[in-house]
Length: 84
View 1 (tube, helix red, strand yellow):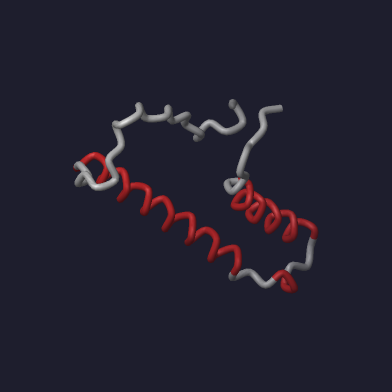
View 2 (cartoon, rainbow, N blue to C red):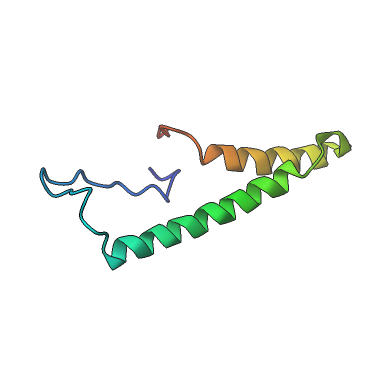
């Protein structure tokens, strides 16, 4: 897990502890707002990379920078990261 330091294991809730109809508490609402802000930042990074026209990249350095940024975004979408 050293390669993915932001992965936090979440234990399964005890049976009967989850009630989808119970009003959400302040902590859960706050965590949802933080998650939304992280998604917005991620979206802004994605938009910035997509704004680059790949045909405008002329040097190996230009392409290397583009690939690095793009793969950093895609790497966050790995469904089941495997430790090496």
